[in-house]
Length: 240
Ligand SMILES: C[S@@+](CC[C@H](N)C(=O)[O-])C[C@H]1O[C@@H](n2cnc3c(N)ncnc32)[C@H](O)[C@@H]1O
Image (cartoon, rainbow, N blue to C red):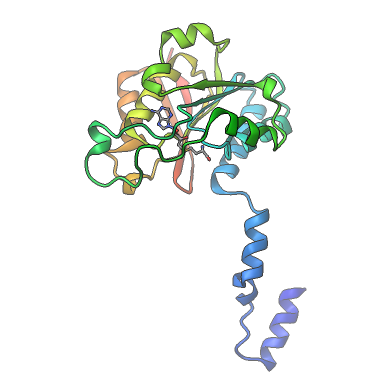
């Protein structure tokens, strides 16, 4: 209807393009407020897949910062009826660690301390957006200290339905992937939100860590799922 009116107007006002209102500041602002980001959309798809395919398990997020992806993960899980799902937040809560090894070589868009948000700040952010803290477990600390057997023993974690790795660096992705190996099941959805970071260099960041992880675990099979924005996702399978 609006397009018809605009098309008719175009006859009288030749410079009026039908598409122009789409790029007006007001339209752009309203769309920014109402549209899902690429990562939010991915989380919606993942939670729906987990529910429809009856993939049981919890939600693990490595790199939560303030909680901007944690909050939609929670609400999309609830919307899809994943009532038993628990939500695990793994983060230093001090931002990125020192870049070492591969991460320190060549181009890198971040520096140590980027994305620092305290545990209180994170809990305030997510609870203010409707996340019930009783469903959430925080594992604070740098991964080099927390992603180990002791943490596994202390967590009531058995299997993962959806995993989001959004920790940016190769070293962080490598530690996260090694940690999740025991929790991956048939149908676990693995989202790597920084797949195209480091100018999408396959020898850096998540792409390198993921390739090495699959090589180290030959029984693990990854079916490529959705590419989105900066990320990629896979549905995992274990060869018997
Ligand atoms: C890009 S931010 C996460 C953004 C968040 N998922 C969102 O959508 O708003 C990356 C996060 O990973 C965390 N991180 C990266 N490497 C880490 C490591 N080795 N140990 C602990 N936390 C790490 C940082 O503290 C930071 O909060």
